[in-house]
Amino acid sequence: METVVSGIRSTGNLHLGNYFGAMGNFLKMQHEYNCFFFIADYHSLTTHPTPENLKSSVRQVLAEYLACGIDPDVSTIYVQSDLPETAELYLLLNMNAYVGELERCTSFKEKIRKQPDNINAGLLTYPTLMAADILLHKAVKVPVGKDQEQHLEMSRTFANRFNRLYNTQTFPEPYAFNFGQSLIKVPGLDGSGKMGKSEGEGNAVFLADSPANIRKKVMRAVSDSGPTSPNEEKPEAVKNLFALMELVSTSDTIKYFEDKYNECAIRYGDMKKQLAEDIILFTAPIYEKINAIAADDLLLNKVMNLGEEKARDSASKTIKEVRKTMGFRK
Image (cartoon, rainbow, N blue to C red; front, side, top):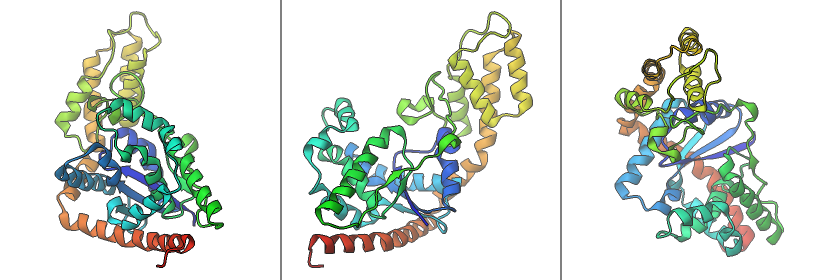
């Protein structure tokens, strides 16, 4: 069975875009591949979170993934920092990673523009840490977005370089997991682009949002002044509202507002109120599970301990092989 590794940002709370996008594929993948899902708390250190925020974020993200259906008995879900093998492989790979290639990384250039007062070594070596996460379990497939494709290419570079330098076949080449046409693009509330946290808190509806927060966000969603002639083309922002309705509303509800739009009689306030209630109804079971799991420290600790044990079994074998290949005594 092929191994798949996917990182979960410890500050990356799930929103509707995640749920209808990658999450649906994760739920299927965990039954078809040997899946490792890790919460990337080491990566978050590049922005210097407080200890309290780091701990609470990890537990919240874990609760959200469990609530959505990731099964810790079927797949392996663990916290990145629970494996010292991650840090060791990161160190060893850095010895054969070159400053020039790391500085040319697009994400590094973008980060130093955004945080010029916090250009730390972790930002520079982010691709090496990502490679360690992947190669530690000898993954061959990695679900990544467009913004991570360059990092995955560098992971292949580091894997091939290690194999070449030490005349070994320790690491397979990892490739992007291609979801094909199965990924659904969920629009944001800002009138353009896709739903995502990086576009601003008001752009995304999070699965952990309270009903009051959902109503507030949806009522602020961008629309326009309304159509001026029957059956006219919808502007992008209005298309986005209807696209969201397609995901959570009934066909009768969608038809009602489509007809109102085509008749130039639509009231966006009414449409947004209905959309908000439909989102609340759709997310209610997940929202309740998230809150229940997040409050269950025994369950969260049990899952983290199980994940650590399963991930450690895989990671320790790789590290032993790497150390032996490189000539270390133990």
